[in-house]
Length: 150
Image (cartoon, rainbow, N blue to C red; front, top):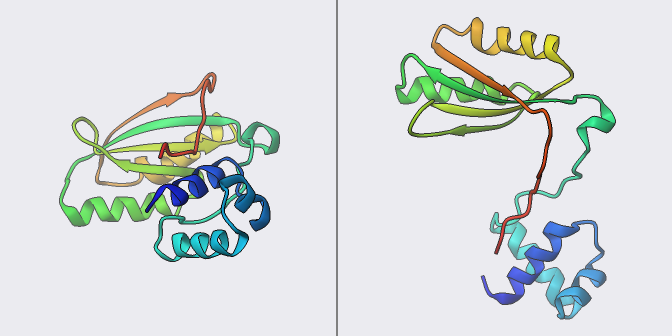
C-alpha cells in the first residue's frame, strides 16, 4: 500500500458515494488508475464493504448500550459459541473479545429499555455459560467516527 492507496482510502472513508471521476480528481490520479486501485483494495480485503451510516435517532432504535459479558467457561469452543449467538442478533452492532476484565464487550442498539430487557433475556439470562453482565446506557454520543487514521 502506497501513498495513493492511502489517499484513496481516506477519501472513501469520508464519502464512499463519490463517482470514480470525482474520487480520481480528489486524489490526483487518472480515473482508470483510480478504478484499478479501488478494485485491488476491494479484492485484497482492505475495503471490506461500503455502507450508508444511518442516524439511529431518525429511524427508531435510540438506546445504545455498551455491555460487558463474562463467561463462566472460557474454552475456545464456548467463546466461539457465544460469538455465534450474538452475531445472529441484529441489535448487536459490534462484539469484541477483550482482556483483561470481561470476556466480551458488545455495542447494542435497541428501541428502548423493554427491548433491551428482551434482548438481555434472549442472549444472557437464558444462556447457561454467561456468568456476569454489566450494561452501560448512553445518555449522549459526543463522538462517532468510522474512519481509520491512515
